[in-house]
Length: 530
Image (cartoon, rainbow, N blue to C red; front, side, top):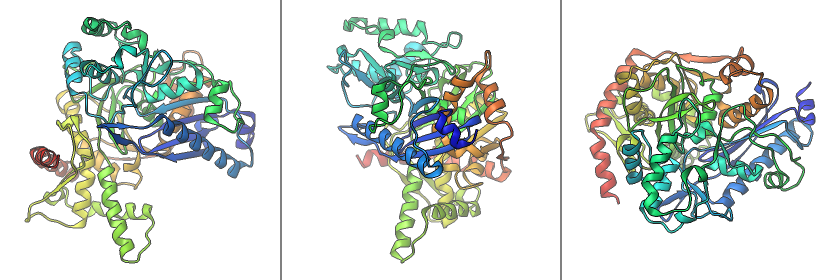
């Protein structure tokens, strides 16, 4: 079939992902080929001490994103999109969306970006002897209990953003195992919530006298390849208010952006990993064996098919870089120049390659918000130098690019140096890797490992969840997700691999030495600017 015939006959897959600054939709054809896309820009808000998105923004955003996809289909193929063969929803992991018995939201959505659950996260980590980060859903629930928030006794269901949207589209309160592993720990053998830890939590909160048990208010866990319901008539209208989209579309388990990132980079097999670098940054490595001990800087999550993954997640990545590029853009306009933003990014990033390997002594902290990996509850973007340092544009940009990877490196060094975790392939995707050969080269230096960027890396998580939807629809009996990706999606696909440059590796280590020692300056900045 031609691409147009595939669309008309509904033999396509649709993936929609809610990123932190953009909602994106991707329609795919055979073997995951991207056919059309749509997007909607949105932004979180800081209201009453909480980073949040309103539910109105969620639905306005997904409707506008889908409408943009429909326009792209019409423009490219001169047909109206009315049906697809399979569909999936993905979103930023973690956070807290809690509902009562009437399915009404009890408190505003608390996103992954919040660092307001330190007490709960520390107590649960000690109780479980398993790292429970602040952004995990169970941390938010327990912190609400510790705060004696009045809504807690009324909780009948809590979930992530992907789980919420999927529920409203299908009526099913379910979650893919990868996203679920960021709500509550998963048992490696069963692929379900850890029953021992569930019991410990129930015992912990028993004196509160709630009429719910934890397992009853968590979404049901599914794995890649499972069917997670179908798009209802009400769900179709929520997605497409014009009423043209047909109901009945089978939907795959909703997943988090970590799982779709692994899928989009073909890094779900053991000893593979990926780095996703955008507004936040995280790296994931699929493990051969359990870690020797608990690390509070490292999350234990899973692939979409339930394999154990070590994850280092940092709240900050490119926001400060983007802010500086905007300053240069404003300067260009002031001087009467109209420079394409992509070109501006490309030139500034590429110029960083001309800088000293250790950034000439310059140090930058990109902390728009707190950074638990390095012990910061709040952030204040900061640039520091001595008068004797080599201060030029190349070193300035290189320092900010290194900074975007520095907190991640601090966490990854525990895996690579202390646990001796082995990586055969590391894949990069996200905005940091768009300028060819720059972010990729510096990531290779940070990890002292080869980093590959695939042709499809720019498609991101929306494409990844579309591929997971296609896997659900097309998989053969006994075919693992890794085999499916290798045989059907990535076979013959080209990518570019960069090996680490020795001078870069040594320079990054020198930068990191200054960066870690200078964290006291960042603490002082946060404290003095409150």
